[in-house]
Amino acid sequence: MWSCEIYYCRMEAVLSIGTHVIPHPRKVETGGEDAFFVGGDGGGVFAIADGVSGWAEKNVNPALFSREVMANSSTFIKDEEASNDPQILLMKAHAATSSIGSATVIIAMLEKTGTLKIASVGDCGLKVIRKGQVMFSTYPQEHYFDCPYQISSEAIGQTYQDALVCTVNLMEGDMIVSGSDGFFDNIFDQEILAVISESPGIDEAAKALAELARKHSVDVRFDSPYSIEARSRGFDVPWWKKLLGAKLTGGKMDDITVIVAQVKTVAVPDDEGSGVEQEKGGEQVTVAATASAEQNE
Amino acid sequence: MWSCEIYYCRMEAVLSIGTHVIPHPRKVETGGEDAFFVGGDGGGVFAIADGVSGWAEKNVNPALFSREVMANSSTFIKDEEASNDPQILLMKAHAATSSIGSATVIIAMLEKTGTLKIASVGDCGLKVIRKGQVMFSTYPQEHYFDCPYQISSEAIGQTYQDALVCTVNLMEGDMIVSGSDGFFDNIFDQEILAVISESPGIDEAAKALAELARKHSVDVRFDSPYSIEARSRGFDVPWWKKLLGAKLTGGKMDDITVIVAQVKTVAVPDDEGSGVEQEKGGEQVTVAATASAEQNE
Image (cartoon, rainbow over all chains, first blue to last red; front, side, top):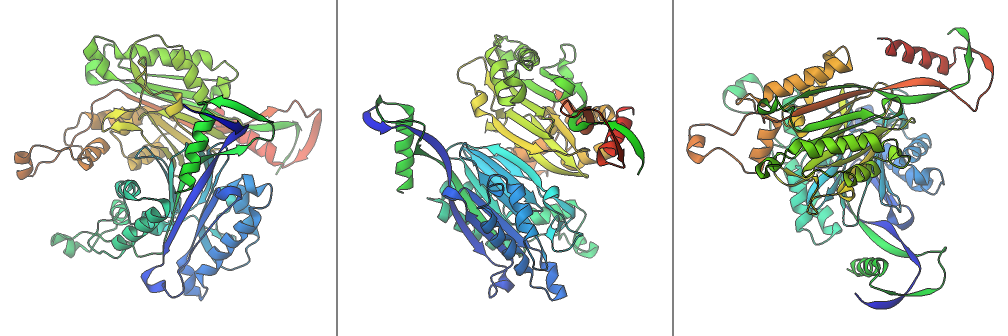
């Protein structure tokens, strides 16, 4: 409880965002085929596109499509309609893309009220962590194992109309962990929670998460989420290896993109209010002070 | 393509809902401690409350609280504010409940536009199935293993403010499977998908799902989602049993409530339109005919 002068203000939710990318071990020189963008007023928007690598067999660089979709997203986020609706942003960014290829895409936008809007085609993922537990997660969409829904330069692909479109109401302190399938295929929820709880900040968390997933991805003995899923779909080692006690294990080598975002609340001047008010221990003052301290970390 | 006369109309999403409840084997006479309600204009709302059984140790019937919360929900769904917002409905239903006890609760509402709004406190669950795959799922919230978030008659419990609040945009044909933890603790996603695909209708699906979960719940050899989760949290059989190759397995005996809902689209007269129009093969006509056929099943 203290006393101070404040202007009329309102509280807005914003995101602090950290990112980390580790390309596939054999794609380090080209930077891999994942792409992402972070933007929007106040950093409230992020997106990941994962170029489908099968295009390399047709002598198409799979990175061109995903990078162009992300570049277009960063352009159209200034469009009024698209800036409020991740599905519309996906539609416009896709329509404006002229590269050949296809990609899985996830786009997330935080409204100032704290509502996170998500549009996702394919198997990029997003989880929300509150008070040390996963309280929300997207699900991958796929045609069959290892063949995700994807937006494409070809008519046979999916569009914004096939997207998973959902929202989740967030609170100050909530952590968002989003990534390409190369991330979520190589790390378990419990590991994500542990890394998040041990990391001093979002940049460190993104880096540590990407590095742990990378370590697992090249470990042939690690029983990864990908291996467990593969076995549950009936994939396995040959029968003669099974007789020797072997089972399908190992990480999945892939490009790894991780975005870690934390929801913060900031006080902004309220145009509708006017003048200065003397207030004691009001909630507005308290929250504003907290937000300010966190921003100075 | 055909020609017919139609009135101006608009398409609205509605739910067809099937339910099935199987009480805990030792609570058959009293009907168990789960409660649910289905209602709202056009059947667009459903809710489940699972009374926390620990209250029996204090000589409190755990069913009273969950049943009263559901009864109050069915009253307040007529309230204008609550009828559009599951979190507000939860707040009002909880505030009006005078019984002693506590419960986990999930409330879901389908808007006419196809947006499903969800508020959940604890470990009741809801999954959406589209084209044979789970495309959305809630996550349980808990204080620690087997102690879920719960709204309560006591101040120590959770409130509507602690709810997971989310939405997901649905399409015609999407299936919703919702249940108490006694359902999801005893059945795997792949089993849910198989039962849904084999069932001729929502009533049969709800019954078959509840019966499969019940069968697993009393099977001490079934390696249930509950047992797998327990082991992953460090619970296990005593060391001397482990030496003999034993591991913690078995279903979890509990009340089992299942709600299965399917999204349908119906044509309703549009008050803003007027008169009759001659139209050839318009999408409105086609969809209306489909919806009508499905409702007559």
